[in-house]
Structures are given as structure tokens and as C-alpha cells.
Image (cartoon, rainbow, N blue to C red; front, side, top):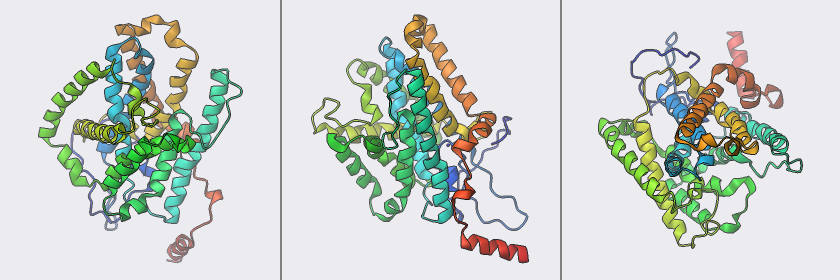
Length: 393
């Protein structure tokens, strides 16, 4: 999932217009990379439309919540409050990312330039970070026998392989008449299929699919509806009720339900709970995602620039998140389990992931996250013809 850290005032920036004839660049569709607004055809000399700050703000705030939730995970055994916050955040932070991914995938097709960007922006980073995570686990966890496997995403890379498959199937979902009910049916079938296997983290890929399809079906006016004052006001008691319910449910319910990586049988529940929990969790996530979007600022903020680097922060903070477990920091420093320690952990996580989203980090790791790889692809004959025409003119 923007190159200035300075705020640009308080003017409101309109959401993307549905009528825009030119779709956004597929490279800009990942939640951690730039999400440009679909630019309209402009007369000569007229500046193209600027990126929409709303989506950059949403991505940054969501990645901060991701990092904070990861820092709370070791605290959930000793703190009911941490467990409640953890469950609430896990209900909507990844669904929010995935909805945005689906929204900016609406114009994806099999055009050569978009397929190239799908490979360089998602497939190549997946391979690179699978290798990096494997080597890191062997060293940090003292596990030299841990094997590398492209079919078994480790930790955070499940999102990349899922996004690759979701986007590749976008033309199919745009073709069917009822894509969201169909995606929910697929997710339900996955939830009751314990033998589906771990290849490509298929459970997560299929159980999170409805959120991608929801984003795929959304239009600019839907975001305008979410931004209404009445929704912002209603979101406050909704979040309060969610926290109260999560505090009650913390000792009674496993947070593994929110990972969407296991079937209901593997979670120790009977098969009939598959449809019930799939629909219930989808409904709860959609409500909280809407409440989250309602409070995302639409104007340029100091952190708007960081929205272009959230995929960097997402993948890079995984080394620290896992390293803290491998090296036993939460066991060694017991003060981290006290209220002040929990607050300190939260602030540190937010600060670290913010730093990892900054432009210097983006420039340093662009070779892995957004490689151009022009040498790997044939040149498009149509593009070459257009270049020759412009040169001749």
C-alpha cells in the first residue's frame, strides 16, 4: 500500500470519480504501495488529478494497527484488556487493507503492462521475502533445518500470494452476477474443509476472499456514504460495544477465529458453525471497517506521505515482531506485561512501523519491493509503435 512530510493545509480532497476513463496503475493498487486516484483524460497542459489522501491515510493508520496488534500478541495471555483490544483490531485491520486492494483492482485485466506489474509488484517481493524470512528464522530461531518453500507462505507473506491470486481472478469476479454471495459461499466451504491443505495458505486466501470482492464491487459513492457525519457519530458507540463484547469474550473465545487460517474442525468446533461464523465474522468486520473508514481523515496529514510505503512497513516489521519472540524479550522483561509496559510496547510498535514506511526506507528497499525488471520482459509492440510515432512527430 506523497513524497513530502509536511501537511498541505485542511482542504478536502475528493474521492476518486467513477467516471474516470483511465484506470489506476496496478502497481499502485497494493495497500502498501501508492494508491493513485483514477486520472481523467486532461487537456494538454492541465495537471493530472492528485492522489487521494484518504486512501493513503487509511493505509497508514491500518498498518499502525497491524504492528500494534502484533506487539500485543505476547501480552494476551496475561492481560484481558490486551486480548480484547487484540480481538477488536484483528476484526478489521486486514479486512480494511483487503477492501482497499479490491477497490483499486476494479480495472485490472490481462493487459501486458498490468501483468508485468503484478509480477514485479507482488510475485517477486513474495519470493524475495520468503527467502529472507526463511534465512531469518534459521538464524534467529536457531533452526537450521527450516526449509524454504514457495508453496508454504511464512508469517506475513500470505497476504502477497493471496493478493496475487485474487487480482489474477478479478476478470472472473467482474463477470459473475452475484460476486459477493459467491465469494461468501467459497469462504464457507473453505471453513468446513479441514483437508484443504496448507499450500499457498489456502484457508486464508479463500476465507478473506469476500473482503477483496467487496472492495471490487465498491464505488466512490459508497465511501461518500461512509464519510457521513451520522456514520462517524454512530461508530463511537459501535466501537465501544465491540470492546465491551471482546472483553467479555476474551476468556471464552479463541482469537484464532480472526486469523481465518484454520477450518472450524481444526478450531474444535462442529461443521455447522462454518456458515454461522463465516457470516458473523464477515458482518462484524464490515461494520468495524466502515467505522474505521468513517474516521479516516480526507485531508493531507503529516502521515499521508507514509501511506505509499505501508507494504514496506508491513513486511519489514515482521522481522522485529518475530525476532522479539525468538529472542524471548517478553519472557525476559516481565515489566512489559504491566500496564506501563503494555503502553510502551504499543508506542514502540507504532514508532517502528512508522519509520519503516518513510521515503528513505522505500528508496533503500525498492529493489526488492518494486523492481523494474525491464530486462525480464519483451517490449510491447504497440508501445514501441507509439514511441516511434512520437519520435517521428
